[in-house]
Image 1 (spheres, rainbow, N blue to C red):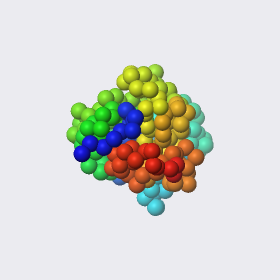
Image 2: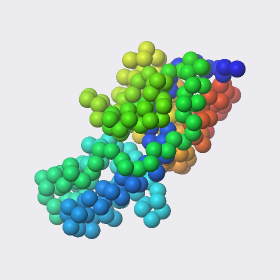
Image 3: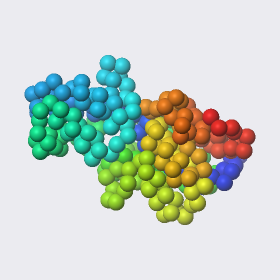
Image 4: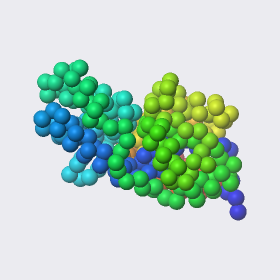
Length: 248
């Protein structure tokens, strides 16, 4: 039986923390980055860099911070500023960062659920699917291919695409809707950070849906979230019951 889409024609997904386990993907990246930076600077910059990235290395968790909320350019800028607090001049700090803050993560690509199955159900409901991520295009396309979901995607926007304005700006959401000929009120934003959900709110999408598989918590995300899900697998059921579902 096909579920009712209740007027939802498009879902815009964040990637890391929403479709993929954020911690398994990006903790190894943070550790590798710190090792490279400490080797290059010969200084104990690790604690300060972890703080900038939003990483609690002892707890093995990533929280709100540059790593979860910014593009590669933004991450490199923040790390450069952190290095400068150790007396490294801006030009040298920028040069070090270019060589020591990689584009791709060496971490594990762990989907939060059976994504091909989920996307197939959403397609059967007449819903278009887009991905909007701060990650690079090369890494994103490679991951989507390996996950076997590329054929389901109607649009993909990445952090290093020319001309984008990163989340939480509404720019990407508006452009995706325009390209796919979908009204803003017919689209949902699904993500795990304030930046994801605020983008949906500011753009005027029908709803912003928070998932608990990334760096955000109910408390940190409640201001910009209309609905909460344990993970994205609950989307078809949520959408089919929209008329009866109350905020939160």
